[in-house]
Image (tube, rainbow, N blue to C red; front, side):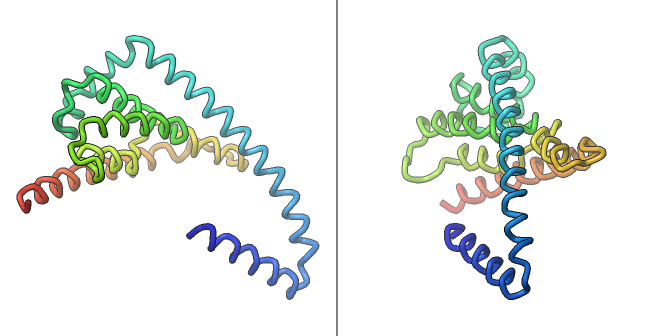
Length: 195
């Protein structure tokens, strides 16, 4: 769908620039914004590499074991029948930690690993299991303590106080995670009774 929408927006913009006599402004903005995009991409790439490396180091230390013990009651409540599988637990916890640190780009590969681990326990391979649905909901809610990606974006755009959004992000993501998790649990129970 986006493959259709973006070309339409671009064509409409070019036509409007020609009609309104702003072709020179259009050309200038293309070159300026291209430079900005490259600069911004390098900033995000560097940040993603840094935090992905830190997460990889954490994966090979006892930090994950400590965090697993802290998060185990929550994980056991949200995800059923995986407490015996260390790989599932580890991947889900790493994904949740990456999201808590606001590392959306670093959380993606960890989320894929967690999904692959959950798929091994899935009896019906062609449909999502309850645990997979819960992981998707938690990733979408994306509970964040340090929204590093948003802070980096605000910083690159010249914000005077890029960290000002931390408190509102805490409120929004905590509410989204709690509501998303509880509603998903309720719908899963409702669906089981229906079957």
